[in-house]
Image (cartoon, rainbow, N blue to C red; front, side, top):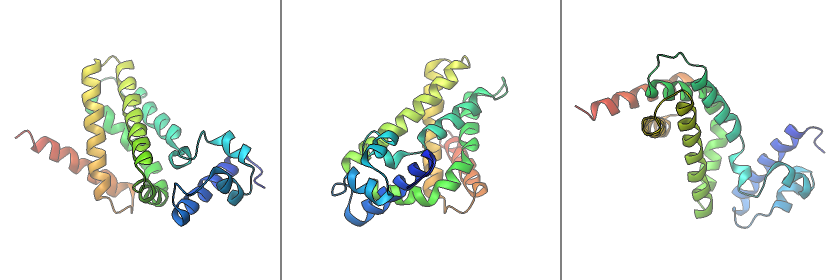
Length: 185
């Protein structure tokens, strides 16, 4: 039996990923996930609201890192630079989570419900960045444009990323910024 909440959460996440890969998302129950993790179903629900949420564990930490990077930045940075700073601050999380993210992506691709949840989670992260920019006094329309553009550039970079290092991902992100600039020429 896991001794800490963090250990139980990790075991539940690992069990869910394994079962979703083995049986499919729809054929897996929270009771099966809990059993595989060596905890009760009640423990499962202490950590995750439903069987979809286990796939999106870590979202809170990501949001906190990114919004803190915006909040702590120098005053003179432009909105787009603030958003890029947020993505750069999260690079260690992206690198550490890459193997699991690839597994999650394969599982999410099998379910419309999971794809919808992934889009909602992505939109919520973008909204958190917009809110952080607005908190700095940036007008909401400008904040929205910067955050959405930053999300698109990061998605473009991450699709090309081989997952080897933060340096590689940073380089791809800078290249995406250059590509966006080239679109205006």
